[in-house]
Length: 339
Image (cartoon, one colour):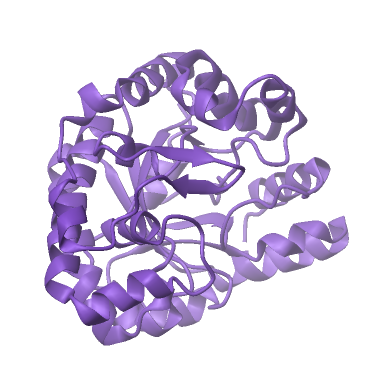
């Protein structure tokens, strides 16, 4: 078994730096595009055989050190009564805007609401046969709530921030429901075979420190604390969160993801705690040639030298237009590095 990723999460000695990539399943892989030719995104997420196939493609093609199951961060909202279409981005049919909207939101058993998630995880764990670890994931309560309030992707998330500013009581009631649903959704992932869980806080960087301390940290921390009982590695990733490091260090995760805006040595100093670090090559670097990719990847690896528990990743997800041969080159570079 290749357990480099799990050992790095625990800050244990490793022979080399493990690598996996956010959005490695799909995006730039021609094998994924072939699967998608006759299948819409929602069907792909809900069909275990297809989701298992595309989850495994990066392992077979790239040789990464961990597999993350193929899904979307909005999937648990389906179990809460939301209807979401992808056209191609997510559009929520009835977004939450008022206290009455919060009243209609359900908290349900995710294994009944989205049973296909757990079938995918169980099948993946069986297919992997211990070759590499399996990663589950979800959005943090704030990030999921932001999508469900906004109704679609947004540059400024003004409806979300407006609601939180004008009616924090309603915001907290909604966050409480989303937290309950997310907690049970992730605990069930661990029981279905996920060996690590990543909590994505994609929109945390929209907030200042006081807002983050009130609306994000308590709910994320509660979920991460609960997952500690499931014996899984816990990863927390706040995109564009350099200004939040002093608060992020209180979240209780085992691993902190760092985006490309902050170098790893600076992040380690700001976090100043018993965390492994994950990251953090700018995804756009993979649009450049092999020489540039090698130079920039080595910069990340050298910044992490001496830090216990570094997991190489991008600072966000693989871009759809990335040449697949550039991703293959990155994996080879990282796996050959011995510092």
